Length: 46
Figure 1 (tube, rainbow, N blue to C red):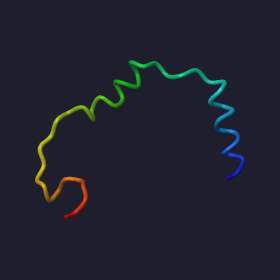
Figure 2: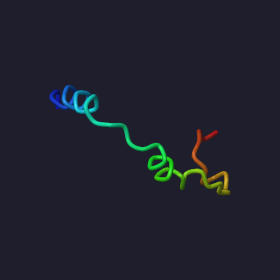
Figure 3: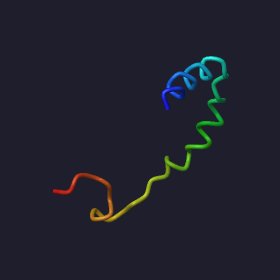
Figure 4: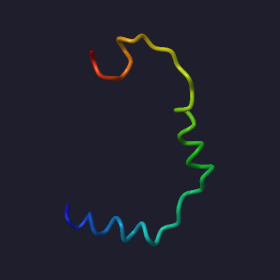
């Protein structure tokens, strides 16, 4: 497990960043507006 804390940052230094359009496209489904009941919505219960 400790090796992962060292290896992952090192690999990240040498790999190119993903294309911004690819990342935006992958997460575009989260931009959709939805309506939910208050009892089903995430949040702190009061």
